[in-house]
Image 1 (cartoon, helix red, strand yellow):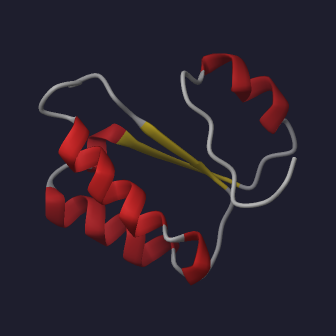
Image 2 (cartoon, rainbow, N blue to C red):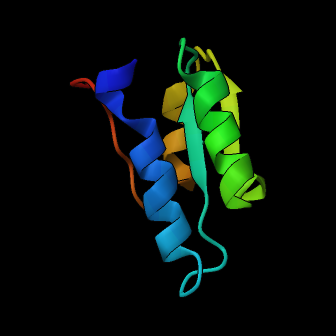
Length: 75
């Protein structure tokens, strides 16, 4: 959804990568903005640093892999 502003996170990742080349973003879920966010990442040349996992029922199992966790809604 537009209010989640995932494109901004992609921009932040582009700024972070020169100093942290192993940085990644993992997006969980689907929505109408997904194709635009994917396109934005492609245009910036950083699509290989972003995973789009789609809908998941096991998100809690992913938390252990994250150094930073952002959520657009309360847990």
